[in-house]
Amino acid sequence: MKVIAGVKFSGLVFLAVVSGLSSYAQRVPLISGTALSFDSGEPLANVLVQLTSESKTVLDVTTNATGKFQFEGNPGRYSLIVRRAGYVRPSGLPATIPLTIEAGRPASDIRAYLQAAATLRGRVLKKR
Image 1 (tube, rainbow, N blue to C red):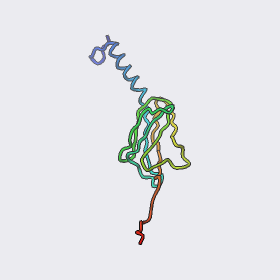
Image 2 (spheres, rainbow, N blue to C red):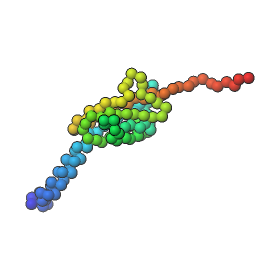
Image 3 (cartoon, rainbow, N blue to C red):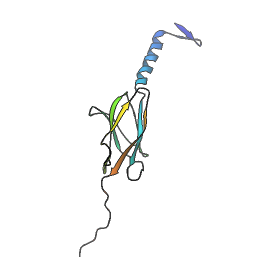
Image 4 (cartoon, helix red, strand yellow):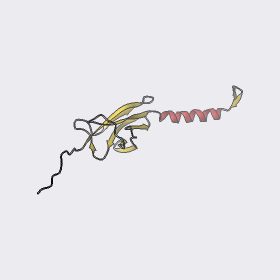
C-alpha cells in the first residue's frame, strides 16, 4: 500500500482509476460543427446529423438553435450525413461528408451546408 499526501492507496484502486481513464480517453475525440444554409450562411436549427460507419448509423443528434452539433466517439473512419425537411445537399458537394478521426485529435469546426429544396415566389391570382 502506498501513502500519498497522508492517504493510503492500494494498487487495486489505482488500477481501477487508470483503467477508467483509459476507457474514457478512447472516446475523447470530439466531432463538432455547424449546419449552415448554403444560400445565406445562416445556422440551421433542427437538422438531423448522423455519424455513419460502413453504411450503419453509429450516432445521431439534432442541431441546436444556433445550428451546432457535437458527437463524442472513437477513432475511425466515418461519414457525416445531414438532413432537414425542405433542404438538400447543394449540387457539387458530396452527399456525405467523409471523416477520419484519429486518437487525441478532434474533428471540430465542420461546416455542413444544406440548400433550400425550392423557393416559390410570386402571387396567386384569381381567374375571372
